[in-house]
Length: 233
Image (cartoon, rainbow, N blue to C red; front, side):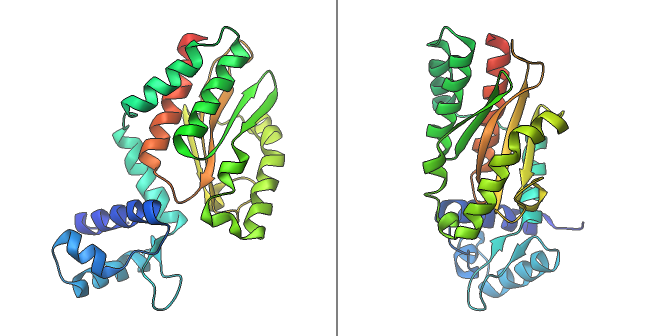
């Protein structure tokens, strides 16, 4: 896929602006940020749209990222391996270190991820799937649509057997929108970290949230949670 550095920067800006506002991003906003004309931005957006990286939800609206656009962005982040924020590190470590039992430590890390990301948190504990933050997930604007809620519910209903059977092997696993094995139309992203625990060599911790989120921060926090639990447990 041929994409210029400016197009890459515009794509990243659209993704980051959309994560903050949940509204399509227009050419006027981007023109101010890049100090070029709106017409120049529109031409660059047309190229990104032709590549399938962004889409226009309505004729008069700005652009939003597609699943392919998010994947391009996430692959860039994975190569960069961003570090989590100091606040995130501290909150995770406090929740985990204050627990004396393995299951409580894992639950503490999940609850911290919920508070820090606003997503649903999940972990496998002794063959069971622990979930926290369902109400936070469904307050996101994407899930006012009942069909998307049903798709997420289907994903969650089947997540434990899927993890057990498929056992994703990467330290950090990211499934964006249609990449999810179940609930492909949920417009949700599953970000999970594999770690070794007393329960299993393939335990998992992570979050499920809308495709519209701060991937840099969430990926770093989930990666840190998995690394920290493996070190401590």
